[in-house]
Length: 365
Ligand code: GLY
Ligand code: MN
Ligand code: MN
Image (cartoon, rainbow, N blue to C red; front, side, top):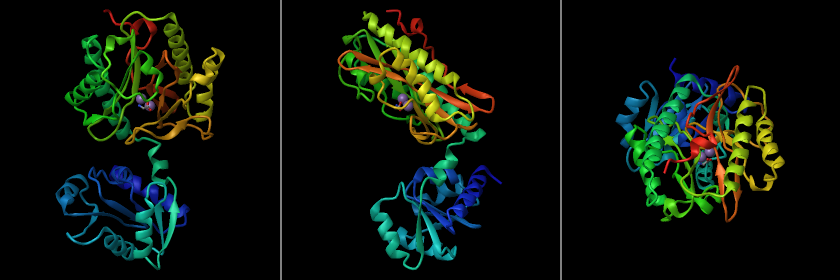
């Protein structure tokens, strides 16, 4: 059985538990996870014994290449996806059809409801997402590949950074380098934030130049060749800075290192978040750390599990999370340090290895 068929088998158990006969997967990322198909505009129906990918003729050849052996329902031009859904749901004899409530639009849900009169629709939440939280060895290898691409790109950026470059130019260069090292592109638009702009956790790059202040925050990642993502943040010191920057940098780094050290199976997301938060609180910066400590990482840049106050579920081996505490001081700037961490049976493995000690963040300008 190939890895995708094995995933669909695991899903079948969850579908049964949800008291549905089949699940219509409409989230394209979930379709990719369950089939290996990288196109879009296609749905997947997983029933008791069957799995059928619903697509259109643009993808006939690609489907043969990417999912050999998978049953397909290719609708001819001029016919609707709804008619295809009806056909495969009836063929699967699904009396209760699960739908992905968290990603389906109201318009699609109501169209399916009309088309499938007589079939009961059962809203399901996060069945595939639950499986995606635990990465298999293929996924871990892909994630590591995306880390290598991101880190190589950063190596080039770091060694070629110049004061007259704008935030936008650096962001553009990161994107180009990630592609040169084999990535599809960045896993999200890179954040390049000079000085006070770094107080915005999700700052958009501007035409401000790197030498407009003495430090720059860079948050970037690669969308690896097969869709797995990496996500890192570093702060580089490029000029004269206030001692306050070093003070908050050291607090954030300590919070991050301690939180990483706490990661192992059985510890909740809440607990890991609390380890970092306490260090930042105790240093007097608690109100300037306004986001969760981290998030799962995989085919999506943000997925489960969260390292946050509201996650009481224990971590499990195979989960991959970011650990990214930050302190953001409006008007002054901010520091965030972000690494990607795999939960292993014995504890954890940090997948990212870009230097992050205070002394290593100084550029020799
Ligand atoms: N790059 C967005 C984040 O770190 O979550
Ligand atoms: Mn990030
Ligand atoms: Mn992140």
